[in-house]
Image 1: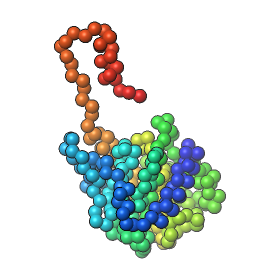
Image 2: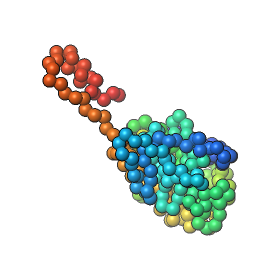
Image 3: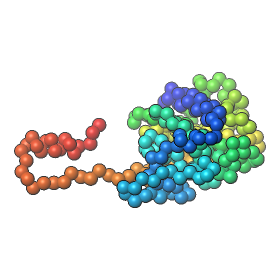
Image 4: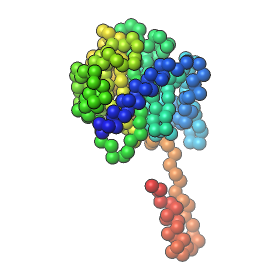
Length: 259
């Protein structure tokens, strides 16, 4: 687990640097259009069967969901926050998403004021037997990957292990060196979360921990709902015509799920 976390953390830094350097024109071409529904608050509303609906993105490039893994993972924004669709990136095994308060979605406004905050999520596909991350695994991964990282607090309660770090060398300009980090597993993906805020912000304390937990719960709910609402394969029609044994075996093999 430690090496997996270290790899995801390295990808997080690289993708954040890349995202913050991207021009903000024409990048909506990067936004996936595979989502079969839209968000209403933290509740997914799905289209009727057979209809394809793109993820809604408003004129300011804001969205309440981000889709990864060919629709297997739906990241869902916590209340009051939006995804910056123009900063979203996708790789062969995951990607990167950035959230800020919806009213502060401009390039230079995310971290202004005491209510400014920026949440990032780095996604990586993992094997089915990957254990859930722990606070100790997070602590170990950061101290191994970043020698300058100083752990200020750890929390193992709720759906996600959290650590509060002080690391002046992070890439979020305008944010305090103190910030929250966490990681959680959902539907074959490991999601590494970081929460940045300016000095003196309440998001550097309990408010930030609550926000991350809300993000995790909204994501789990949205992913589960998407999986539940996905159309299932129709069962093969039975026939009254006689079959020999070889035909029956072939029919069973064709109907069996493939590994």
